[in-house]
Length: 267
Image 1 (cartoon, one colour):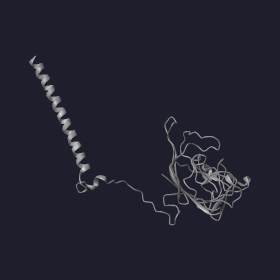
Image 2 (cartoon, one colour):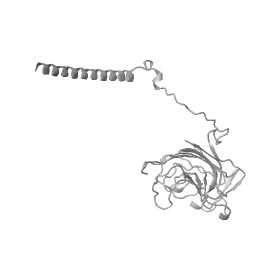
Image 3 (spheres, helix red, strand yellow):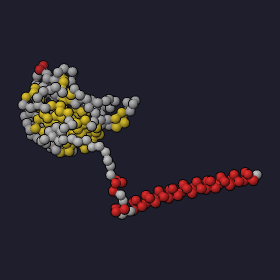
Image 4 (spheres, one colour):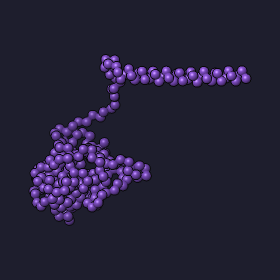
């Protein structure tokens, strides 16, 4: 019986000691946190908030809009080596004066073209020019930049050319209107700078996170980390389907659109 009492007393002492040590550790942590939060700047080691990681060196382009050193140049004004027709044939757009232009006659190679390479997350630079104004609304200077071949950032002559807001230049077509309309006059070169984050899917193909688009048009923010609602459809709302990397696609909408200085930085 005495042995049992001694063991019980020992257990109580052990538990009490454990609780005391736990409380002491908690008090020490809380005290350290309190002292850190309320200490003067002179008492805090500045190294606590310093981060050291490898940051890659990138040489910017020699002129505004020129490709940086780590970019993939998709069109340099000389040939269509990085592009093909959307159906797999050779790309047949006209290359002249440092630009590529949609041909008006389909039998000579018109139609949508897309990159041979596929991409996921990237920064993109693209310059385009709409033809002299003919027609109105969606019939005037119409094309499109399809991200991963699915999600359209609209290209249109939107200079004094009313149309539905989520179909004008700078919109995510049929989804999100642009924040502003900085479109230039027909015949003037314009610039898209785009940051694109690809959608994320689970192993079963369920959407975890949508695609996001940040876009500057002629230096003006038109899409600010905008969530893409799904693939671009002309009628109805597109539904996400699991996919991997995809090409960039330029649309032939029947207008002689021109493009130049296209480069991409995969991220």
